[in-house]
View 1 (cartoon, one colour):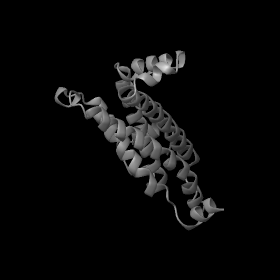
View 2 (cartoon, rainbow, N blue to C red):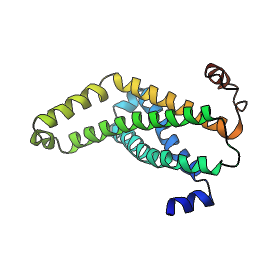
View 3 (spheres, one colour):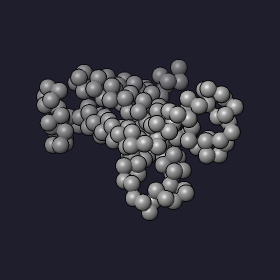
Amino acid sequence: MYYQLISNRMNIHPIVVHFPVALLTLYSIFELLRFKFLTQKPYWFYVKAVFVIVGSALSFVALASGSTALHALANNPPNRTLINLHKSLAGFSVFIFAVIAVLYIIAWIKRSRPDLFFRLGILGKILLYIEHLLLETPLILFLAFVGLCAIVLTGGFGGAIVYGTNFDPLMRPIFNWFYIP
């Protein structure tokens, strides 16, 4: 009932989506730019962790609000291909950053309560191994880059849903690749 009330009154998706996009974009840039004077600061890990954890949590809200946006456009239905691409890439973006956020949560706990993982036995060792493999190697750069690309493409397809496919000349080759007029 409450969901229908919100979706009938206004489209909250544009309001909700920009904050996680900003946080996750900044996180990706912070992760990809490896300046030694920053990476050696003790707070740098926590800055990136807060950005990706909060951004990831809010991205679930943005993803859920996407269906309200579709209801708001019921009078003027947009291109189905654009909607499907936008939804798929949004889900992929949320997944990538949720994985990164979980890795940062594990690393944060490891820094503040290292004994906790030893109490978990083999499960704790597996979690620490996965965290080390993905977060403390160049694989995190790959994940951050893929996540950033997914956000950019999701935004491009979202913008095309609202403003049409001629709004951004940089997205035109991508629209052509997917045969979107």
